[in-house]
Length: 149
Ligand SMILES: [Zn+2]
Image (cartoon, rainbow, N blue to C red; front, side, top):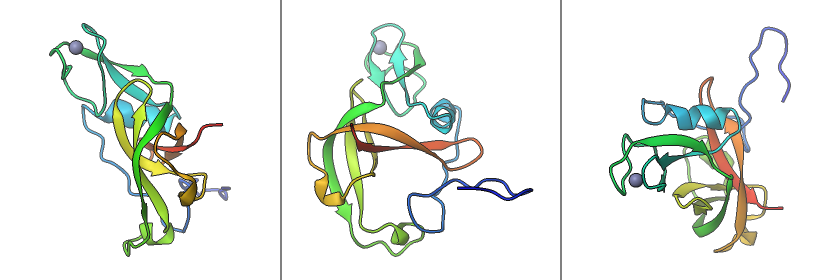
């Protein structure tokens, strides 16, 4: 997408004219949204036991230890999915049919996301996917997943 002089480039939605809703980052989630804005997928890793978790929390849910944000591979597999064929709210109505999926990251955490870059009928459980990113505000991006090459 190109921008004319004096006009900020607008985040490119997957389809349609209205951009995706943007999150409101807070202390626990800001590192995630900021990394996604930079095109990186991050998860939290426990400094004590090595457990990976997402969404961001103050402490490890496995042992209560301190956690750090680390880069993830951006790879995962589809655990479950559905095709949305009716949604009258914008911008979603411009995208139907679209896929909402649960993706198990290779690091362990399960995330809810969209599968893009393929026909909805091509999505299957166990399908290998890789993250791609869309900026949705000045400070946040979101991770979508597409079939792994
Ligand atoms: Zn831990």
